[in-house]
Length: 398
Image (tube, rainbow, N blue to C red; front, side):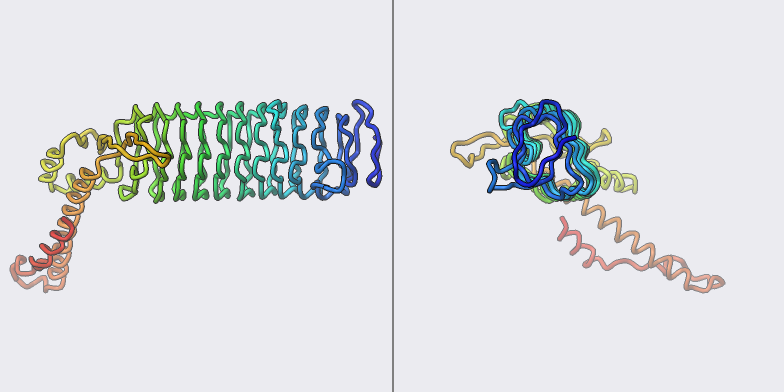
């Protein structure tokens, strides 16, 4: 093994292992590198010939990073197009912005191993690594910057683990080979255009915990056919699912969520024809099973709403909206008037059932308190919720 000292350059011999000490500007012809155990940070060194010691080393095939390394700085291996694999030691806590970015889109980087201990991946860190096929994000990572894996067109498998809090802006945009993604429960936001143009993405699993789906988050995911919006989601921004041409069904667990006001689904969601509300159906079914069957006629009287097949389905409505760049388009939404009517019916009967149970509980309490040897008429023990109170509550809810 050869070595180098100070800031002095030396010529690299083809296929020899170059030992990097952290002080020098590495020759562009280097092919194999091993880091000296003393290297703690690989950072930009603007006083040298290049801002990054390895930037533009297009012949670099192999890099062995040392245990003890703490940070891989911005643009560290930018445009190292021949590098095929990299194993990030568990001592590394940060990978800087554009660290492995290849702006010529000819990257041969196929394998990237990220170990527990890593906390942050900077923006564009692996952007346009067009040969990468799989990435597993360690549980210790809490932050991934914008464009981190954007343009990784062969990236087919992404494993996100609990601990991550935000999916960054355009983080996986244009990952056209990606087929499925599961968002951990620790993630609270899917940022703007995070999965934009992932044209092969067929399955998206959003777990409880997520609160916001930002603008254009899943725009032009043309293979996506179904999506379930968790109970915890309180906001879906405009154009979040715009251009999802094969999206047929949206399942909504929080019926109070605001959807459609800003063209969440637009005319390009031409296959979308139904919204499902499983939690509402469960409440409705409980009312019917409790014997209050007169609600059935009222539900049947709401045109085009399906509910007898074990699911509550509200059809879509189309309306014209103004684009933020001018002009108009057709937005697709669920029928909010029908939904409000259904919620009103269900709430009315739930309160009615609750007051009945309350009356029975009071009745039973009086009976228990009465001497069992006393022949007092049981009917005399009954206590009813006062009619005006009951009517006021029901009128308010209705």
